[in-house]
Length: 370
Image (tube, rainbow, N blue to C red; front, side, top):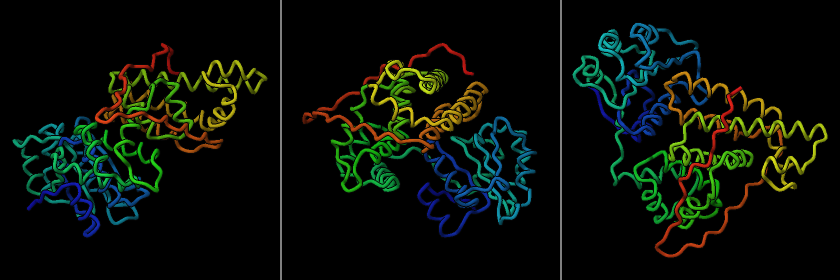
């Protein structure tokens, strides 16, 4: 008999009992689905992962026979292997019926995870999953569930929230869990660890950003400010900016940084470099030191890979493609880190908030990716 648990109960069950053989991660909340899959992945494969015993399929591309063969494979130097089938609702009736035996008679040495926003209950496959799988409910949170979820996320990133700050986060982010998580990550990088986050901190962090241009994005990467980087990306995507245009603009900025470094290495003037980079001359050396040769080479590879994914119809969401690139670029390379620019002090009046402009400021340079 199948059971239904939520994302919190899943983590507790995995710690106490370890992973089972069959799961259906079901619901419309993207973040909860991703978190459930991550928890199952770590439970089966460990923190470091295990490429030999992991395989992932997508319902709109995979053949039922291939999934079935993967489920039946023997683990390599491990107790279990993991098979994840994303967008399971897109499996055709014909392909899904090939998996009925896997569902009705699970393989003891394999954990199979089907992931879907919504299943068609009329199909034999869906009915078999409902009977046999542990269903992880990833429905959107009810309003009463938000405070507890925000509290757990705050603890995860290492911050303490005053009650008014938690309430304000819920108000300004609405029902978007990814938006709340981004705000918490920004707060973790902004608020000193020795005090709790206040409502004023939330107001200031959401209202302090004057722009979201490609220059702002590169500067945030140079400073290693992951929260600001993700915020700039989110603001431009929310404003309707195309992912490929954001990627192209950032690649253009990186090529310009590389050319400026080469020019200075060949005796070019720092004043000209400052003009091209739009910054004070005394800041130029420290800024450019953050972009080591290894970092720039890695960036170009990341841009090319992301360009192929975005143009090739990858099943990965464009936002996730860009986030992975930006977070990889924020990692500490060989070079000198710039100290983050302190946020300006916002003059807040009681009962008012500062609005953030949604004007698109990243411009396409109409230059092809190289």
